[in-house]
Image (cartoon, rainbow over all chains, first blue to last red; front, side, top):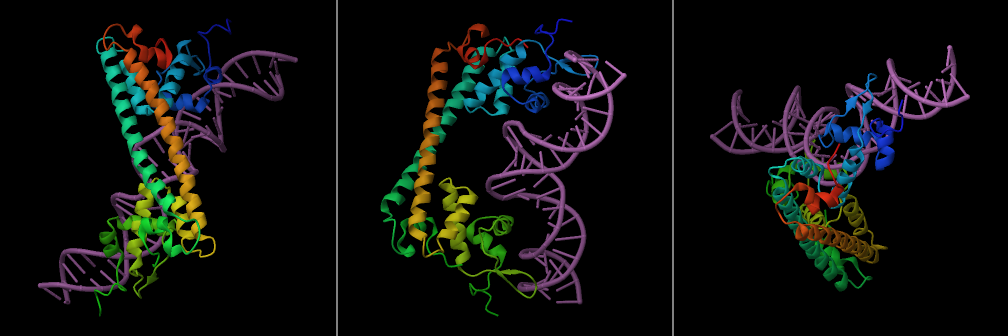
Amino acid sequence: MDIQNPRHITIGAVARQAGVGIDTIRYYEREGLLPEPVRRASGYRDYGAGIVERLRFIRRAKDLGFTLQEIRELLALSTDRERGVKSVKQRAEARLGEVEQRIRELQRVKRGLKQLIDACPGHGALEHCPILRALGGEDKV
Amino acid sequence: MDIQNPRHITIGAVARQAGVGIDTIRYYEREGLLPEPVRRASGYRDYGAGIVERLRFIRRAKDLGFTLQEIRELLALSTDRERGVKSVKQRAEARLGEVEQRIRELQRVKRGLKQLIDACPGHGALEHCPILRALGGEDKV
DNA sequence: CTAAACCCTTGACCATGGTCAAGAGTCAAG
DNA sequence: CTTGACTCTTGACCATGGTCAAGGGTTTAG
């Protein structure tokens, strides 16, 4: 009965369509990122059509560096018609700030490494290696 | 008998001087980042003076983004007088490449977020929020 | 001598984002 | 009806870098 109706889609089909593992879907459900779907008499999860879009949302947000915790909040906001758009924009701005901070940290690390590499002749006695010296001096233990 | 001789320094003193936890020192020992120290008759670890420098080495390398695995390798190289300097420089260069790659990824993320934020009015219907739309479209599940 | 402060080992636990296995029930095709 | 593919739950396990607790022995100051 109506097997290809998108109103009757099993977890395996969802997993295939969204390109994630079955266990991942159940994990997201446990973690509150996906609503608990209705169940068939057998106990099988029975998903509506929107589930694949929601998984796609999660994947894209993950690619933008949001944690599952942050994504859970975004999803909650996206169904809150009172506070919605403003808060979503604020979250995105906060996330942007974190990304910029992380970029600055990495650029500092990069400069540190570059200095060491440029100063290192690449041969000779270990005692004169600026990398090892900068990291902590002699290796007497 | 000679209590302040640096040849008789307990794990607690090492931890204080290096600014790490006692458990961290034992953890590093288990993980092969620190040599197994000699033991007193009581079984107490008995460290030489170099241990604090070595812990400092580890901390600085960690700040530069090396994993403990990489640090273990650096430490091994720093005592290998044959292959030493050249390999150390190569490790640092590899690490630099990783850092640069990560910076590029984050800059891509940053651009994506910026576009969304700039396009978002910050008010109005959720249906028109470009952030939510970009992340995955409607929220029908 | 006693008590506080220290040390020992073994093994569990934290967060993160899942993955996998066991054992049992369900569904669809032939 | 049977077989194979699918699903269910519970709970263990992966890496990373530690942290903490239990239950015991040691050392040192007063």
